[in-house]
Structures are given as structure tokens and as C-alpha cells.
Amino acid sequence: MIELTVNAAGLARSRFAVSPLHEVVTTLLPWGLGPAPDSDPWVARARRVLRRARLPLLSELALDSGGYVPDFLSPHPSGPSPTIEEELERVRCTPPGRVLSELEALRAGRPHHGLAGSELPPEVRRAMARGGAHVAGQAADEMRRYWELAFAPHWEAAKTALDGEVDRCAGMLARHGAAGLFNSLHPGIRWADGTLHVESRFRIALPVPLVVVVPSLVAPVPGVAVDPTRTGDRPPMLVCPVRDRATADTLAPAAPSAELARLLGPTRAGLLAALAQPASTAQLAQRHFLSPATVSYHLGVLHRSGLVARARSGRSVLYRRTPEGSRLARSR
Image (cartoon, rainbow, N blue to C red; front, top):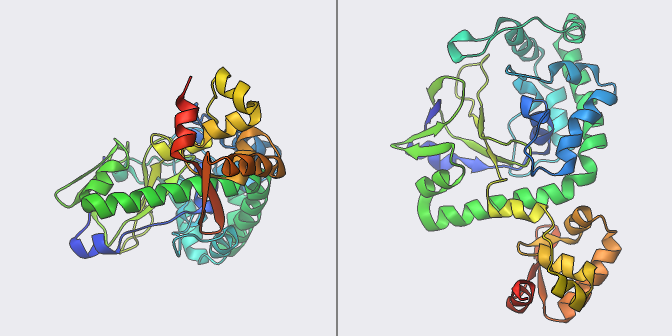
């Protein structure tokens, strides 16, 4: 069990962030080998890309079972929505001493936190011999390549879902306060008497200045990034899977009824059925294996028919069913 005690001031400073690099690094954890059955196909493919793309350092840092992925690979998001370029630059600029101390934690472990040590893999030892700055640069280069191959084609749709989760949490905070918000994140996360309790095989209890909450499409269970090599007031990252809640439904196409398909045609019926939750053109195209132009055309027909509405959300235009569209989608 991980227990994070946050005072009122720390609770007021706590924030949410959507981090592309954190999703990349999360696939290096053991669940990257066997993601949740309802995960998007790109999550399941990520580890296969890692094995085939000749990324020696990342391949050796990826975990097949329990262990520690160095924290410098996933720096705390500097704002609510950093770009992948901003985050990779922060990895590259990690102080060399910190890089080496975190890699040393792989060898020595931290038994009092439940973290066992292990022998350093050959590529990690070779990179360390050239210094912490070299390790940071090689890690940033390999993660950029991994991102381009496994994540970049799917990020717009993924970010839309993650932003939707942040919006859901904002509404929960406004209506039910901080305690209601934290208790709504996941069954494995509980808030009581000023302390966050997160189910974990690790044993950590500490006061923290604030909590950075990072929703994730990759993580199947909650997690807390608490750097075992450092002390002080560095805030932990609380990772929350979004698969259990309604926003995750936006990632999987719903099957329309046969009657709806005969009425509207299979493509428009499938899009209308999928819009139980708001989605962008790119997101729908990704899920339904259609071109964005095809999706845009059919959404235009549905919009002119009064079955869907659209509204801008940041840089995206999200479509949703109107009440008339929902009645038609549910009818037989």
C-alpha cells in the first residue's frame, strides 16, 4: 500500500496533466507485455515495436516482471499538456548524477520499499561507462524513435480521450469537492483523513507537497511514481487508468443494430452508434479504419440531419449525438 499525506495547501496545488512521454514509458512496465483485453490495438503492439526497432537501452530497461524503471525517463509534466518534444528535451537535460543514481537503484534496489535489486543489463552498463549525460541522450533518442513508430499515429485520438477524462474530473471536483474527486478515480484509490491510499505491492508512506494526477490509457491499474533514489519535496505522480469509466468507451466502436444499419447505411450507423461519448473526426477514423475525409463526409450528413452536434474543444472539434440521434441509435 502506498500512502500519500497531503495537507490543505498541497491539495490546492495538486493538478492534472496529460503526458505523451508518460504513456510511452508506461509500456516499459510489466503490463506492457500483456495489456488489458479492452486496450487499443496500438497499446498491445507497442512492445512488439520495441523488440523489433533496435532500441537497445529501452529494450533492456523494459520490465518483464517487477522492478524499477528509472524516473528520469518520465519527468514530471511541466504543465497541463506538454508536447513530446518538450518532454524529450527534459530527459536529455537530466543532470548526469541523477541519471547514474537512478540506474544504480536498478542494481542495489530499495528493500525497505519492497524494491528488489538486479544485475545491470549489458547495454545499460556500456552506456553508464560513457557517463550520465550520454545515457540521457541515448534514452531521449531511442524514446523519440519508439514514439514515432508506436505512438505518434494514434496520439490525437488518445489525447482526446485523456483530455475528456480531465474534463470529467474537473466536473467531479466542482460538484463533489476534492474528496469526491479522488474517490471517483479508481476502486484502487481511496481518500480518507487527508491521505491518499493507493493499492500497490510497494510499501511507502510519506507526506507530499502536492500530487500530479496523470490519466493513462496504457496503465491497467493505478500506480504512483515515487523516485526511490531521491528525497525532498519532489511531488509524486498518481497514474489513473481510464478504462473503467465512460470516457474509455470513446475508444471502442459500438455495434449498431441491423435495423439502424439498414436505415442509415452501415458506415453512418456505426458512427452514430460510436458517438455515445464525444469524439473527433480523427478519433473516429482511427477506430473505424476509415479515412478522415470519409468520416467527415458522413458526420456532415448526420449533422445536417440533426442526429449529431459538434463543438470545439481546444484544437479539436468533437461530435456527439443529439437527443434525436440517441433515440434513433437505441431504437429497434
